[in-house]
Image 1 (tube, chains in turn purple, yellow, orange, cyan):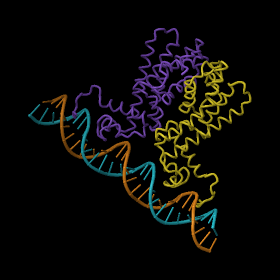
Image 2 (tube, helix red, strand yellow):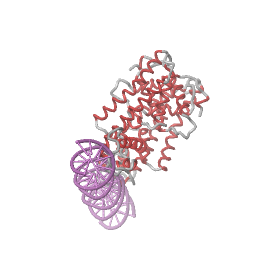
Image 3 (cartoon, rainbow over the protein chains, first blue to last red):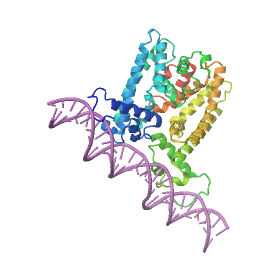
Image 4 (spheres, rainbow over the protein chains, first blue to last red):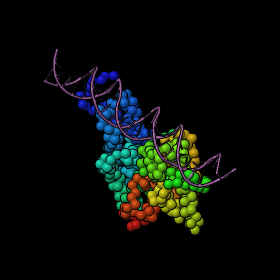
Length: 205
Length: 205
DNA sequence: TAATTAACCAAGCGCTTGCTTGCTTAATTA
DNA sequence: TAATTAAGCAAGCAAGCGCTTGGTTAATTA
Protein backbone atom coordinates (compact mmCIF):
# COMPACT_ATOMS: atom_id res chain seq x y z
CA UNK A 1 0.00 0.00 0.00
CA UNK A 2 2.08 2.93 -1.19
CA UNK A 3 1.06 6.08 0.51
CA UNK A 4 2.92 8.87 -1.28
CA UNK A 5 2.35 10.06 -4.80
CA UNK A 6 2.80 7.56 -7.54
CA UNK A 7 1.44 9.25 -10.67
CA UNK A 8 2.41 12.90 -10.77
CA UNK A 9 -1.01 13.64 -12.12
CA UNK A 10 -1.63 11.34 -15.08
CA UNK A 11 -5.17 10.11 -14.75
CA UNK A 12 -5.93 10.71 -11.09
CA UNK A 13 -6.72 7.02 -10.82
CA UNK A 14 -7.76 6.92 -7.18
CA UNK A 15 -10.21 9.72 -7.82
CA UNK A 16 -11.70 7.66 -10.60
CA UNK A 17 -11.80 4.64 -8.34
CA UNK A 18 -13.88 6.66 -5.93
CA UNK A 19 -16.18 7.83 -8.69
CA UNK A 20 -16.78 4.35 -10.00
CA UNK A 21 -17.40 2.89 -6.56
CA UNK A 22 -19.71 5.74 -5.63
CA UNK A 23 -21.72 5.42 -8.82
CA UNK A 24 -22.15 1.69 -8.28
CA UNK A 25 -23.21 2.10 -4.66
CA UNK A 26 -25.52 5.02 -5.41
CA UNK A 27 -27.30 2.94 -8.04
CA UNK A 28 -27.44 -0.08 -5.76
CA UNK A 29 -28.67 1.51 -2.56
CA UNK A 30 -29.55 5.09 -3.39
CA UNK A 31 -27.70 8.27 -2.51
CA UNK A 32 -28.89 8.73 1.06
CA UNK A 33 -28.55 5.08 1.99
CA UNK A 34 -24.93 5.05 0.85
CA UNK A 35 -22.52 6.36 3.45
CA UNK A 36 -19.23 7.97 2.67
CA UNK A 37 -17.72 5.17 4.74
CA UNK A 38 -19.19 2.62 2.34
CA UNK A 39 -17.53 4.39 -0.54
CA UNK A 40 -14.21 4.68 1.24
CA UNK A 41 -14.23 1.03 2.20
CA UNK A 42 -15.07 0.00 -1.37
CA UNK A 43 -11.74 1.41 -2.56
CA UNK A 44 -9.75 0.48 0.56
CA UNK A 45 -9.55 3.88 2.17
CA UNK A 46 -10.36 5.11 5.68
CA UNK A 47 -13.54 6.96 6.34
CA UNK A 48 -12.26 10.50 6.04
CA UNK A 49 -9.99 10.10 3.03
CA UNK A 50 -12.51 10.57 0.22
CA UNK A 51 -12.78 14.18 1.36
CA UNK A 52 -9.28 14.76 0.15
CA UNK A 53 -10.53 14.19 -3.40
CA UNK A 54 -14.05 15.58 -3.10
CA UNK A 55 -15.29 18.44 -1.01
CA UNK A 56 -18.59 16.79 -0.16
CA UNK A 57 -20.75 13.76 -0.77
CA UNK A 58 -22.93 15.85 -3.09
CA UNK A 59 -19.94 16.73 -5.22
CA UNK A 60 -19.23 13.02 -5.57
CA UNK A 61 -22.77 12.43 -6.80
CA UNK A 62 -22.62 15.30 -9.23
CA UNK A 63 -19.28 14.23 -10.66
CA UNK A 64 -20.46 10.63 -10.97
CA UNK A 65 -23.59 11.63 -12.85
CA UNK A 66 -21.90 14.04 -15.23
CA UNK A 67 -19.02 11.70 -15.92
CA UNK A 68 -21.42 8.85 -16.47
CA UNK A 69 -23.56 10.86 -18.84
CA UNK A 70 -20.53 11.80 -20.88
CA UNK A 71 -19.39 8.20 -21.10
CA UNK A 72 -22.89 7.13 -22.11
CA UNK A 73 -22.98 9.86 -24.72
CA UNK A 74 -19.78 8.68 -26.32
CA UNK A 75 -20.94 5.08 -26.38
CA UNK A 76 -24.09 6.26 -28.06
CA UNK A 77 -22.16 8.09 -30.77
CA UNK A 78 -19.82 5.15 -31.23
CA UNK A 79 -22.77 2.81 -31.70
CA UNK A 80 -24.38 4.98 -34.34
CA UNK A 81 -21.05 5.46 -36.10
CA UNK A 82 -20.98 1.72 -36.79
CA UNK A 83 -24.25 1.90 -38.66
CA UNK A 84 -23.30 2.08 -42.32
CA UNK A 85 -26.68 2.68 -43.93
CA UNK A 86 -27.25 6.35 -43.28
CA UNK A 87 -30.19 6.64 -45.63
CA UNK A 88 -32.46 4.67 -43.34
CA UNK A 89 -32.99 5.94 -39.82
CA UNK A 90 -34.35 2.67 -38.46
CA UNK A 91 -31.03 0.84 -38.00
CA UNK A 92 -29.66 3.96 -36.36
CA UNK A 93 -32.50 3.96 -33.85
CA UNK A 94 -31.95 0.25 -33.25
CA UNK A 95 -28.29 0.82 -32.52
CA UNK A 96 -29.09 3.68 -30.15
CA UNK A 97 -31.69 1.70 -28.23
CA UNK A 98 -29.34 -1.23 -27.96
CA UNK A 99 -26.51 1.00 -26.74
CA UNK A 100 -28.74 2.73 -24.23
CA UNK A 101 -30.04 -0.56 -22.84
CA UNK A 102 -26.48 -1.79 -22.69
CA UNK A 103 -25.45 1.22 -20.67
CA UNK A 104 -28.37 0.73 -18.33
CA UNK A 105 -28.44 -3.01 -17.87
CA UNK A 106 -25.10 -4.59 -18.60
CA UNK A 107 -22.54 -1.82 -18.70
CA UNK A 108 -20.77 -0.10 -15.90
CA UNK A 109 -22.69 2.98 -16.75
CA UNK A 110 -26.27 2.93 -15.49
CA UNK A 111 -26.13 6.65 -14.94
CA UNK A 112 -29.65 7.51 -16.05
CA UNK A 113 -30.83 5.67 -12.95
CA UNK A 114 -29.11 8.34 -10.89
CA UNK A 115 -31.05 11.17 -12.46
CA UNK A 116 -33.72 10.70 -9.82
CA UNK A 117 -31.16 11.27 -7.08
CA UNK A 118 -30.61 14.86 -8.17
CA UNK A 119 -33.18 15.77 -5.53
CA UNK A 120 -30.30 15.72 -3.11
CA UNK A 121 -28.47 18.46 -5.00
CA UNK A 122 -29.02 22.18 -5.06
CA UNK A 123 -30.43 24.12 -7.97
CA UNK A 124 -27.17 25.02 -9.74
CA UNK A 125 -25.91 21.44 -9.72
CA UNK A 126 -29.27 20.27 -10.99
CA UNK A 127 -29.09 22.74 -13.85
CA UNK A 128 -25.63 21.58 -14.81
CA UNK A 129 -26.79 17.97 -14.93
CA UNK A 130 -29.90 18.87 -16.88
CA UNK A 131 -27.69 20.50 -19.49
CA UNK A 132 -25.60 17.35 -19.86
CA UNK A 133 -28.74 15.28 -20.17
CA UNK A 134 -30.17 17.62 -22.78
CA UNK A 135 -27.11 17.04 -24.89
CA UNK A 136 -27.62 13.30 -24.56
CA UNK A 137 -31.15 13.68 -25.85
CA UNK A 138 -30.24 15.58 -29.02
CA UNK A 139 -29.33 12.57 -31.18
CA UNK A 140 -32.56 10.91 -30.10
CA UNK A 141 -34.73 13.76 -31.21
CA UNK A 142 -32.81 13.84 -34.46
CA UNK A 143 -33.38 10.19 -35.28
CA UNK A 144 -37.04 10.47 -34.36
CA UNK A 145 -37.39 13.41 -36.70
CA UNK A 146 -35.87 11.39 -39.54
CA UNK A 147 -38.24 8.52 -38.87
CA UNK A 148 -41.25 10.79 -38.85
CA UNK A 149 -40.08 12.44 -42.07
CA UNK A 150 -39.88 9.10 -43.80
CA UNK A 151 -43.32 8.16 -42.52
CA UNK A 152 -42.16 5.31 -40.30
CA UNK A 153 -43.31 7.12 -37.17
CA UNK A 154 -46.64 8.91 -36.90
CA UNK A 155 -45.17 11.80 -34.93
CA UNK A 156 -41.88 13.02 -33.53
CA UNK A 157 -43.30 15.54 -31.11
CA UNK A 158 -41.33 15.90 -27.84
CA UNK A 159 -43.64 13.64 -25.82
CA UNK A 160 -42.68 10.78 -28.11
CA UNK A 161 -39.03 11.12 -27.15
CA UNK A 162 -39.89 11.37 -23.48
CA UNK A 163 -42.20 8.37 -23.60
CA UNK A 164 -39.46 6.43 -25.33
CA UNK A 165 -36.99 7.34 -22.61
CA UNK A 166 -39.54 6.15 -20.10
CA UNK A 167 -39.82 2.77 -21.76
CA UNK A 168 -36.07 2.38 -21.69
CA UNK A 169 -35.17 3.95 -18.36
CA UNK A 170 -37.83 2.02 -16.48
CA UNK A 171 -36.35 -1.28 -17.64
CA UNK A 172 -33.91 -1.57 -14.70
CA UNK A 173 -36.98 -1.84 -12.47
CA UNK A 174 -37.97 -5.18 -13.93
CA UNK A 175 -35.33 -6.56 -16.31
CA UNK A 176 -33.20 -9.41 -15.02
CA UNK A 177 -30.19 -10.58 -16.98
CA UNK A 178 -30.92 -14.14 -15.85
CA UNK A 179 -34.42 -13.96 -17.30
CA UNK A 180 -35.61 -15.33 -20.62
CA UNK A 181 -35.25 -12.06 -22.51
CA UNK A 182 -31.96 -11.01 -24.07
CA UNK A 183 -31.08 -7.40 -24.59
CA UNK A 184 -31.24 -7.86 -28.34
CA UNK A 185 -34.76 -9.23 -28.03
CA UNK A 186 -35.76 -6.38 -25.76
CA UNK A 187 -34.37 -3.95 -28.31
CA UNK A 188 -36.55 -5.50 -30.99
CA UNK A 189 -39.59 -5.36 -28.72
CA UNK A 190 -39.06 -1.63 -28.22
CA UNK A 191 -38.65 -1.06 -31.94
CA UNK A 192 -41.76 -3.07 -32.72
CA UNK A 193 -43.76 -1.08 -30.22
CA UNK A 194 -42.52 2.22 -31.60
CA UNK A 195 -42.84 1.45 -35.28
CA UNK A 196 -45.99 -0.63 -34.92
CA UNK A 197 -44.61 -3.58 -36.76
CA UNK A 198 -45.42 -7.25 -36.40
CA UNK A 199 -42.58 -9.06 -34.73
CA UNK A 200 -44.45 -11.91 -33.25
CA UNK A 201 -42.62 -15.02 -32.21
CA UNK A 202 -39.34 -13.69 -30.98
CA UNK A 203 -40.74 -11.52 -28.22
CA UNK A 204 -43.44 -13.88 -27.05
CA UNK A 205 -41.59 -14.67 -23.85
CA UNK B 1 -56.19 20.15 20.61
CA UNK B 2 -58.04 17.34 22.27
CA UNK B 3 -55.74 14.76 23.64
CA UNK B 4 -57.93 11.89 24.73
CA UNK B 5 -59.86 9.55 22.51
CA UNK B 6 -62.45 11.03 20.25
CA UNK B 7 -63.52 8.28 17.85
CA UNK B 8 -63.74 4.97 19.66
CA UNK B 9 -62.25 3.32 16.61
CA UNK B 10 -64.23 4.44 13.58
CA UNK B 11 -61.76 5.24 10.84
CA UNK B 12 -58.53 5.69 12.75
CA UNK B 13 -58.26 9.10 11.20
CA UNK B 14 -54.97 10.19 12.70
CA UNK B 15 -53.38 7.00 11.47
CA UNK B 16 -54.58 7.88 7.99
CA UNK B 17 -53.30 11.40 8.39
CA UNK B 18 -49.88 9.98 9.09
CA UNK B 19 -50.09 7.67 6.10
CA UNK B 20 -51.05 10.45 3.74
CA UNK B 21 -48.37 12.80 5.01
CA UNK B 22 -45.74 10.08 4.88
CA UNK B 23 -46.65 9.11 1.33
CA UNK B 24 -46.45 12.70 0.19
CA UNK B 25 -43.09 13.30 1.86
CA UNK B 26 -41.63 9.99 0.68
CA UNK B 27 -42.55 10.88 -2.89
CA UNK B 28 -41.21 14.41 -2.51
CA UNK B 29 -37.88 13.73 -0.84
CA UNK B 30 -37.40 9.99 -0.86
CA UNK B 31 -37.62 7.53 2.01
CA UNK B 32 -34.23 8.04 3.58
CA UNK B 33 -34.28 11.81 3.25
CA UNK B 34 -37.61 11.99 5.06
CA UNK B 35 -37.28 11.92 8.84
CA UNK B 36 -39.93 10.63 11.17
CA UNK B 37 -39.86 14.12 12.67
CA UNK B 38 -40.86 15.57 9.30
CA UNK B 39 -43.83 13.25 9.20
CA UNK B 40 -44.83 14.02 12.77
CA UNK B 41 -44.61 17.74 12.19
CA UNK B 42 -46.68 17.47 9.02
CA UNK B 43 -49.64 16.25 11.05
CA UNK B 44 -48.95 18.37 14.14
CA UNK B 45 -47.50 15.71 16.39
CA UNK B 46 -44.30 15.56 18.41
CA UNK B 47 -41.37 13.56 17.17
CA UNK B 48 -42.05 10.33 19.02
CA UNK B 49 -45.79 10.09 18.58
CA UNK B 50 -45.97 8.41 15.17
CA UNK B 51 -44.52 5.34 16.84
CA UNK B 52 -47.71 4.94 18.77
CA UNK B 53 -49.45 4.18 15.46
CA UNK B 54 -46.61 2.46 13.60
CA UNK B 55 -43.91 0.25 14.95
CA UNK B 56 -41.21 1.58 12.62
CA UNK B 57 -40.53 3.92 9.76
CA UNK B 58 -40.38 0.93 7.43
CA UNK B 59 -43.85 -0.14 8.48
CA UNK B 60 -45.07 3.32 7.57
CA UNK B 61 -43.57 2.99 4.11
CA UNK B 62 -45.00 -0.45 3.59
CA UNK B 63 -48.49 0.59 4.70
CA UNK B 64 -48.36 3.71 2.53
CA UNK B 65 -47.39 1.74 -0.55
CA UNK B 66 -49.93 -1.03 -0.10
CA UNK B 67 -52.71 1.37 0.77
CA UNK B 68 -51.82 3.54 -2.18
CA UNK B 69 -51.75 0.59 -4.54
CA UNK B 70 -55.19 -0.50 -3.40
CA UNK B 71 -56.60 2.98 -3.86
CA UNK B 72 -55.04 3.19 -7.30
CA UNK B 73 -56.47 -0.21 -8.16
CA UNK B 74 -59.97 0.84 -7.28
CA UNK B 75 -59.70 4.04 -9.26
CA UNK B 76 -58.55 1.97 -12.18
CA UNK B 77 -61.56 -0.31 -11.94
CA UNK B 78 -63.90 2.64 -11.47
CA UNK B 79 -62.52 4.29 -14.60
CA UNK B 80 -62.99 1.17 -16.74
CA UNK B 81 -66.48 0.66 -15.33
CA UNK B 82 -67.51 3.96 -16.88
CA UNK B 83 -66.55 2.76 -20.34
CA UNK B 84 -69.77 1.61 -21.93
CA UNK B 85 -68.50 0.07 -25.15
CA UNK B 86 -67.20 -3.26 -23.98
CA UNK B 87 -66.81 -4.69 -27.47
CA UNK B 88 -63.84 -2.45 -28.25
CA UNK B 89 -60.81 -2.64 -26.00
CA UNK B 90 -59.34 0.67 -27.12
CA UNK B 91 -61.55 2.99 -25.05
CA UNK B 92 -60.92 0.76 -22.08
CA UNK B 93 -57.17 1.15 -22.49
CA UNK B 94 -57.63 4.88 -22.90
CA UNK B 95 -59.55 5.10 -19.66
CA UNK B 96 -56.93 3.05 -17.85
CA UNK B 97 -54.04 5.14 -19.11
CA UNK B 98 -55.87 8.31 -18.18
CA UNK B 99 -56.66 7.00 -14.71
CA UNK B 100 -53.09 5.84 -14.18
CA UNK B 101 -51.66 9.19 -15.25
CA UNK B 102 -54.19 10.90 -13.02
CA UNK B 103 -53.04 8.83 -10.09
CA UNK B 104 -49.42 9.63 -10.83
CA UNK B 105 -49.57 13.27 -11.75
CA UNK B 106 -52.59 14.98 -10.34
CA UNK B 107 -54.05 12.69 -7.73
CA UNK B 108 -53.08 12.22 -4.15
CA UNK B 109 -51.92 8.80 -5.09
CA UNK B 110 -48.56 8.73 -6.84
CA UNK B 111 -47.76 5.41 -5.26
CA UNK B 112 -46.01 3.77 -8.19
CA UNK B 113 -43.24 6.30 -7.64
CA UNK B 114 -42.62 4.68 -4.28
CA UNK B 115 -42.01 1.25 -5.75
CA UNK B 116 -38.35 2.15 -6.11
CA UNK B 117 -38.11 2.80 -2.39
CA UNK B 118 -38.79 -0.83 -1.56
CA UNK B 119 -35.01 -1.22 -1.42
CA UNK B 120 -35.29 0.00 2.13
CA UNK B 121 -37.56 -2.90 3.11
CA UNK B 122 -36.73 -6.51 3.86
CA UNK B 123 -37.56 -9.43 1.63
CA UNK B 124 -40.93 -10.37 3.09
CA UNK B 125 -42.27 -6.83 2.88
CA UNK B 126 -40.99 -6.59 -0.66
CA UNK B 127 -42.82 -9.78 -1.57
CA UNK B 128 -46.08 -8.50 -0.10
CA UNK B 129 -45.81 -5.31 -2.13
CA UNK B 130 -44.91 -7.19 -5.27
CA UNK B 131 -48.08 -9.23 -4.85
CA UNK B 132 -50.22 -6.11 -4.59
CA UNK B 133 -48.53 -4.70 -7.67
CA UNK B 134 -49.08 -7.92 -9.60
CA UNK B 135 -52.77 -7.59 -8.95
CA UNK B 136 -52.67 -4.04 -10.26
CA UNK B 137 -51.11 -5.30 -13.46
CA UNK B 138 -53.72 -7.94 -14.21
CA UNK B 139 -56.30 -5.66 -15.88
CA UNK B 140 -53.54 -4.20 -18.00
CA UNK B 141 -52.43 -7.54 -19.36
CA UNK B 142 -56.05 -8.36 -20.00
CA UNK B 143 -56.75 -5.27 -22.08
CA UNK B 144 -53.52 -5.74 -24.01
CA UNK B 145 -54.54 -9.30 -24.81
CA UNK B 146 -57.88 -8.07 -26.14
CA UNK B 147 -56.17 -5.48 -28.31
CA UNK B 148 -53.78 -8.03 -29.73
CA UNK B 149 -56.65 -10.43 -30.43
CA UNK B 150 -58.48 -7.78 -32.42
CA UNK B 151 -55.33 -6.97 -34.34
CA UNK B 152 -54.92 -3.46 -33.01
CA UNK B 153 -51.66 -4.33 -31.28
CA UNK B 154 -48.94 -6.40 -32.92
CA UNK B 155 -48.14 -8.29 -29.73
CA UNK B 156 -49.26 -8.56 -26.13
CA UNK B 157 -46.20 -10.37 -24.83
CA UNK B 158 -45.18 -9.41 -21.27
CA UNK B 159 -42.47 -6.97 -22.34
CA UNK B 160 -45.15 -4.87 -24.00
CA UNK B 161 -46.93 -4.37 -20.71
CA UNK B 162 -43.69 -3.57 -18.93
CA UNK B 163 -42.60 -1.11 -21.57
CA UNK B 164 -45.99 0.55 -21.33
CA UNK B 165 -45.63 0.89 -17.58
CA UNK B 166 -42.24 2.43 -18.18
CA UNK B 167 -43.70 5.05 -20.51
CA UNK B 168 -46.28 5.96 -17.90
CA UNK B 169 -44.31 5.65 -14.68
CA UNK B 170 -41.42 7.68 -16.00
CA UNK B 171 -43.70 10.62 -16.71
CA UNK B 172 -43.33 12.14 -13.22
CA UNK B 173 -39.67 12.68 -14.10
CA UNK B 174 -40.49 15.23 -16.75
CA UNK B 175 -44.18 16.13 -16.81
CA UNK B 176 -45.12 19.52 -15.36
CA UNK B 177 -48.74 20.42 -14.83
CA UNK B 178 -47.92 24.02 -15.74
CA UNK B 179 -46.51 22.91 -19.09
CA UNK B 180 -48.26 22.99 -22.46
CA UNK B 181 -49.39 19.37 -22.36
CA UNK B 182 -52.64 18.36 -20.68
CA UNK B 183 -53.12 14.91 -19.25
CA UNK B 184 -55.73 14.15 -21.86
CA UNK B 185 -53.28 15.05 -24.60
CA UNK B 186 -50.59 12.96 -22.99
CA UNK B 187 -53.02 10.06 -22.85
CA UNK B 188 -53.64 10.38 -26.57
CA UNK B 189 -49.91 10.54 -27.25
CA UNK B 190 -49.43 7.26 -25.39
CA UNK B 191 -52.27 5.63 -27.26
CA UNK B 192 -50.95 6.84 -30.60
CA UNK B 193 -47.52 5.49 -29.83
CA UNK B 194 -48.92 2.13 -28.77
CA UNK B 195 -51.40 1.66 -31.57
CA UNK B 196 -49.26 3.31 -34.22
CA UNK B 197 -51.93 5.68 -35.34
CA UNK B 198 -51.60 9.14 -36.81
CA UNK B 199 -52.62 11.73 -34.32
CA UNK B 200 -50.67 14.66 -35.59
CA UNK B 201 -51.57 18.15 -34.56
CA UNK B 202 -52.79 17.73 -31.06
CA UNK B 203 -49.56 16.30 -29.68
CA UNK B 204 -47.17 18.53 -31.60
CA UNK B 205 -46.26 20.54 -28.52
C1' DT C 1 -68.26 8.61 40.56
C1' DA C 2 -64.20 5.49 39.93
C1' DA C 3 -61.48 2.84 36.87
C1' DT C 4 -59.85 2.30 32.46
C1' DT C 5 -57.99 3.35 28.16
C1' DA C 6 -56.76 5.73 23.58
C1' DA C 7 -53.83 9.09 22.19
C1' DC C 8 -50.63 11.63 22.81
C1' DC C 9 -46.19 14.72 24.95
C1' DA C 10 -41.54 15.62 27.12
C1' DA C 11 -37.25 14.08 27.42
C1' DG C 12 -33.63 11.74 26.06
C1' DC C 13 -30.64 7.42 24.75
C1' DG C 14 -27.50 5.21 21.76
C1' DC C 15 -25.96 5.24 17.34
C1' DT C 16 -24.71 6.90 12.72
C1' DT C 17 -23.76 10.55 9.73
C1' DG C 18 -20.91 13.88 6.91
C1' DC C 19 -17.00 16.12 7.59
C1' DT C 20 -12.61 18.28 9.98
C1' DT C 21 -8.11 18.47 11.96
C1' DG C 22 -3.42 17.36 12.65
C1' DC C 23 -0.15 14.25 11.55
C1' DT C 24 2.61 10.77 8.61
C1' DT C 25 4.76 8.76 4.62
C1' DA C 26 6.57 8.16 0.21
C1' DA C 27 7.57 10.11 -4.06
C1' DT C 28 9.21 14.27 -6.55
C1' DT C 29 11.89 18.35 -7.24
C1' DA C 30 15.70 21.72 -6.45
C1' DT D 1 20.76 15.75 0.11
C1' DA D 2 17.11 18.95 1.58
C1' DA D 3 12.67 20.85 0.81
C1' DT D 4 8.28 20.17 -0.94
C1' DT D 5 4.15 17.99 -1.96
C1' DA D 6 0.49 14.39 -3.14
C1' DA D 7 -2.12 11.20 -0.81
C1' DG D 8 -3.58 9.40 2.71
C1' DC D 9 -4.47 7.80 8.10
C1' DA D 10 -6.13 8.21 13.05
C1' DA D 11 -9.17 10.24 15.83
C1' DG D 12 -12.98 12.50 16.80
C1' DC D 13 -16.74 16.30 16.78
C1' DA D 14 -21.38 18.11 16.34
C1' DA D 15 -25.60 17.26 14.49
C1' DG D 16 -29.19 14.40 13.39
C1' DC D 17 -31.30 9.90 13.34
C1' DG D 18 -34.90 6.16 14.67
C1' DC D 19 -36.91 4.85 18.56
C1' DT D 20 -38.07 4.17 23.81
C1' DT D 21 -39.79 5.32 28.22
C1' DG D 22 -42.70 7.22 31.66
C1' DG D 23 -46.04 10.33 32.49
C1' DT D 24 -50.37 13.19 31.30
C1' DT D 25 -54.99 14.20 29.74
C1' DA D 26 -59.48 13.69 28.17
C1' DA D 27 -62.94 10.68 26.70
C1' DT D 28 -65.19 6.19 27.67
C1' DT D 29 -66.93 2.51 30.48
C1' DA D 30 -68.56 0.13 34.77
